[in-house]
Structure formats: C-alpha cells, structure tokens
Amino acid sequence: MPRFPKAAFLQTAFLAALLLVAVPAPNAAQAQRGDAPVEPGQTFTARVLEVTDGDTYDVRRSLGGEVTIRLHGVDAPESAQPYGTAATQAARRYVGGKDVRVSVEEIGRYGRAVASIEVQGGNLGAMLIGDGLAWHYEQYAPNETEYARLQK
Image 1 (cartoon, rainbow, N blue to C red):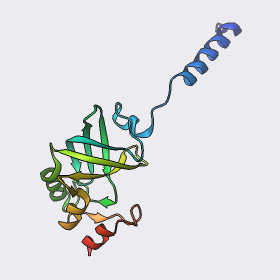
Image 2 (image 1 turned 90 degrees about the vertical axis):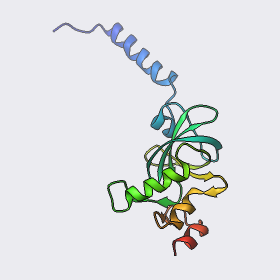
Image 3 (image 1 turned 30 degrees about the vertical axis):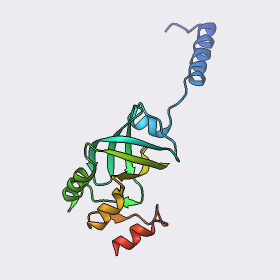
Image 4 (image 1 turned 120 degrees about the vertical axis):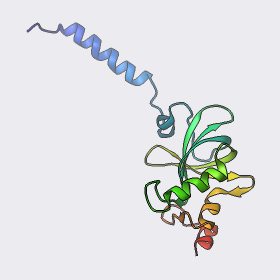
C-alpha cells in the first residue's frame, strides 16, 4: 500500500480547514429552503405558494426567496389525522396563492421560520382556531390571549 507523503497530507488538511472557515454555514431557516435566510423579528410580505397542512406553509418573499413557515402558537392536525384535510383545505381557502404579511418569531427546531401570518387584516392562527380546526399551542405561545379565548 503506497504511503501518503507527509507534505501532501499537511497541504490537504490545511486546504480542508481553510474551506471550512471560509464558507459560511447557512442559518437554520436558510438551510430549510436553501435561498431565503430569515431572522427572528423580521416582518415581510410574501405570497403563499403551498399549504402543506394547517400549520405549515411555503411562501415566496416579495423581495425574493422562498421560506417554509410554521405557524406560531398554533397546532393543527397533520394531513393524515382526523380533521387534517379540513384544516389544510381551510388554510388553503384563507391564504393559498394570496399575499400575506409574515412576522417571524423564531427559528424552530426543524429549521422552519416560526411566524404569525396576517391576511387581509386577519390573523390566520385566530381564523383556524376560531373554526375549530387548530389549537392554541400554549407551550410555545403562552401570551396569545386571543388564541386562548377563541379555543374555549
């Protein structure tokens, strides 16, 4: 088995280390969609491209780039769960293909931007909870008193 010359090994190791330092790592939200980094506290307008389920949306920002949004303070049934299809269809009626205002609260554990969504002056989370198709996710949004009131 041929030996790897020490000088070549050191040169390769140096170049690999330099590459790791020189190429910035994407933040979590950028990694999720690949082209639109977002940060907590940002507010932007976007068009809803896809409603994955009652609480997950893909949007295209008006300034460019796509972002996956997890609705803040709301939990909706998954598509395969009871009422999941109804929640997804209601969300599509409210925001599918429409321009919305997105306010990023945080970057979630799965790399999605966790945000509230406003459409034509109404809060999407409140609409879904008011329809009985989603729940107030108190663990992550204890101060959302409107959500708590609508759920009762």
